[in-house]
Length: 351
Image (tube, rainbow, N blue to C red; front, side, top):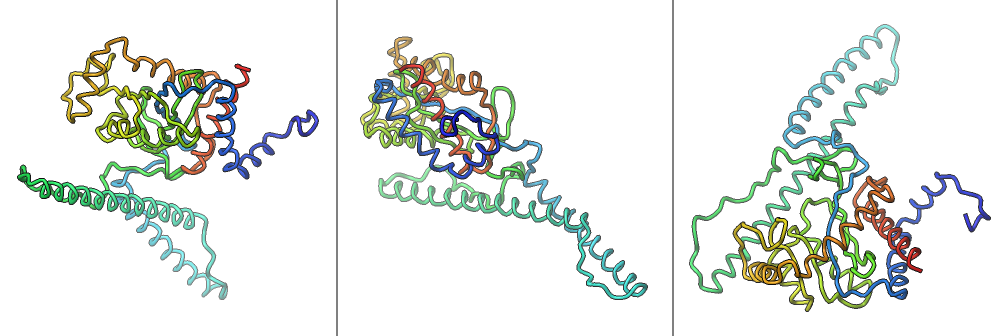
């Protein structure tokens, strides 16, 4: 509006501009973040990490399970074949009566079923490829574990596990509107969506790193968020906190390797030291003992008051509850834009 002398542009113009320059707009995040740092709003004394599930631009009712895909593929293939044979017979009869035509006209109802069949076959192939890749990764992991066992001279425990399945689980699903989104569980039920991630600085609730995954799990996002924070600001946070969804031996080892004081809950409970489940792994046990010793004075208490309000502000105050774009690449850029807008709001309020 400033550039065009106060004349508000049409919403379609704004939408098309965003689509054309999505990558460049996502890159604004670091520029705004550094402005916030210069304004004294980012200290990196304590950074809290969390994720929130946000609806995709797709209905969960447009998804189909692998088991259903197999049945529907057979049904549609038979139906399309039957209709094509009927159309071929009708064409031959009409040629006898009215003379020859091109004969390649495709009725709409045949084309629609063929498109549906093609979509189902493509989604089925993607699920099968993912299952094969997961099986190959599991075999690689087992081979590496076996090599370590032999190198350490340890005895083999128990029976040899069965080889991983090459075929997808019957309940594995794929959405036809946005195939890269997933069914995710939230406190309000299941949604078709993405798991949006953020690392938030405790000084003024500025987002210092963001990420996005279609996975329900947060574990694989912990190290990328920490490393992205360092990449964005050229320094590491002194402390980091996260809930039990991020707890793993690998993530705790990553904290130690980066010389960052960590506070990660070792299980889901009102207080991180109240977990009753069995704790496995020396680093996880040490973290539990650390949180238990500090009690309610633990720095872990900062997590809830730092990162959770940010998601509340984005969803409640600004009304962002669903992505508008589709596909993980575009949705990731859209989430970067949302995080940039959050930081700009904080910056405008503070200065």
